[in-house]
Image (tube, rainbow, N blue to C red; front, side, top):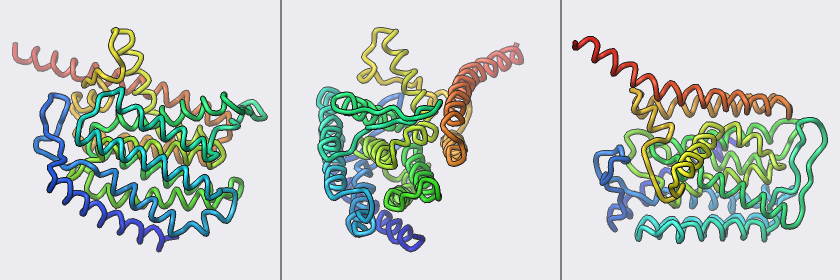
Length: 346
């Protein structure tokens, strides 16, 4: 396993360097042209291509081991085609700046391809015992809602260097550890999680602050897509992904609600009120903000390895309370500091 990780990591490193060179050559870069953008120079985009290429190349090279158990060729093909649609749509958005209505077509098509390949949420564990089963349109609707939710969480979260790519690495490692335990032994899914972590890790070397390349739209959507699909094929372990991505999911949910209450379109009115922006405004550096997210994702993801269904529900509640606490602290600490400075200057 360690050899596989190292090889994929190196493939990702070289892929990232190549994509960085091509993005600069063809001027596919992100300029710091708005107050929301916190970088101070043009940074190449299309980083998602490096992760996608490394990840799916590794899946193909390890297809015999991956298909040795419950997964089928149809699962992998639909997974790949969905990712390809996302990468194409994201790259087009990076180059031509598509409208939100045009952007959403690609992730929706990816969801439909995945469902057509036989990947879907057909059961969810009941915390009080038993399982909830779904079929037909209900299962399809849940799958689309889940995948779209994960994709737009990582899309809206991608505002600080290394944040989304790092959370992707942590997600891959937790899924690997979870599916390699005796009780939930799924070496095929575990291998896919490890491959994802390695592909993301090679890219993260260049994406951590100060970033030398950005994920771009293709990458920010792709990370959420892969996490969402891996959570489904690992036996609908939705709670695992929710605990890892809990803070970002709650932040995005609050952002959507806040914009709706303000009569704003939640997907076309970008602002600087996301939690990571508030943490930066409160005085944390980019690295400190990202490391805080990493710590929470790793801590709650690790806890999920040992918790039963009810325990995971409690952990989700704790995560929600923690999110509220962090949000309030990020709002009131800057105000308290400002008042303190004003009182000292009088």
